[in-house]
Figure 1 (tube, rainbow, N blue to C red):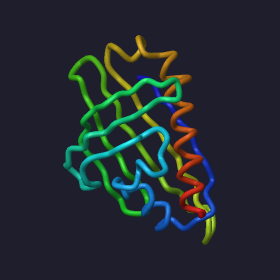
Figure 2: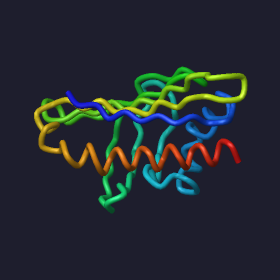
Figure 3: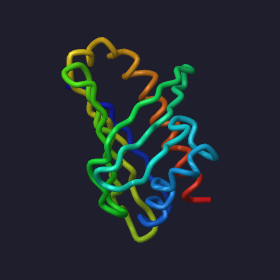
Length: 141
């Protein structure tokens, strides 16, 4: 198992952050990491996700939405059975009436996890941080 964890404080309500996070059709306008998501934030739905890492790697994958708790948590899980799995997790924690902390994580498992170790630690984590900053700017703007 391997986990990437980032967090950022955002001066906006949980509903505003949730709105930005789940408006997949707007991702191309603001998100430097997850460039596009096709599908809906509905439990059991299949998504088609296009990412571009800070190092310029382009990847596509098709995870399944596993949890939708409005204004609190969104999760999806992608798998290559036995080889690699990744559960992407967004948690919105209320800090005050007008601010939240976004915890943005991914938990990886499977045989290939160690193979991708350094790129996960550096490139993907930096992508999470860039996405977090862009989400903050959009939610506060």
